[in-house]
Image (cartoon, rainbow, N blue to C red; front, side, top):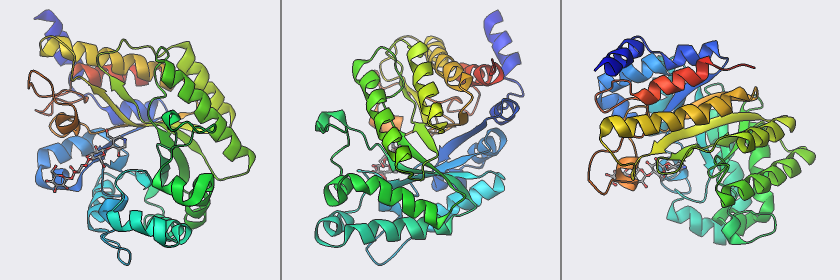
Length: 348
Ligand code: G3I
């Protein structure tokens, strides 16, 4: 059709990396070391499109810590080697999270010296990748309003072991290990203007950030994960813009670190689904990049060939999921064009 011819012409030569750079942004993806090692065509696409690399799983505790006395850096080092090939810095994910903690560490948090465990881990990992990992999700998903604490903090294993101080302990240890690294708190559920719990979570997050900044704790960015909902109308308007403004007013940068669109329940044929997904990417990113404090955009994968959505959010009709900017054949989708369009319209 005429429309698809126009699309194909526009997608030729598409470079998310270059479009982002021209807008003063960095664009990147999360990767698994096995996929880029086993799939040269996919690796070439990442090298072509990205100048920031995140480890989807390789820097988590369960990947790095087979037991208390050992670190296993094999997978993380493979990601770092790939980032070097891409001439790209890394964004590190993640030092403190309530998931992906090995059983021995859960036990150690209850019975051992939790502060030493945390500080030793952060010091070792952050020092090793200093100069390569330029920014870290030091804390991932600290807010859980359903845990019903007045401060909104999640009752994670870290919280249970160390109390609310765990945030400050972690951030100070990371800063001491690499004073040049930019340190972020990351969370989901901050994106939508018309979902009540998300709007409330923004307020909780702002209070948390404000408290840490007021106490002089090293903290440089808020990371929005950006797991967007294919079956919810995009509501990324004045509310999101005002929230980002308030975060920026605290002197914090804004990152998007896990962007994708869950199309589990999006109806229609592939063309219709791709249009819905692209519209969501475009509307979200236009609002986010209009905020001058926004610095990086990372998608949680690059091609539908490799996405954890396949396992976690399969479609009821068993059709392959299509949450990312490139399709399983490594061709750019309308979402990729929508991203490039949002980047290139950055400005006042
Ligand atoms: O390594 C094993 C493999 O040997 C085995 O064959 C396979 C069978 O299922 O499992 C593999 O481990 C899985 C790993 O992903 C690698 O695929 C784990 O079971 C699985 O739990 C793990 O899931 C990851 C999840 O975080 C939990 O750590 C996902 O890949 C990853 O995409 C997801 O990412 C999270 C972010 O860290 C935080 N925000 C939410 C996001 C999920 O969208």
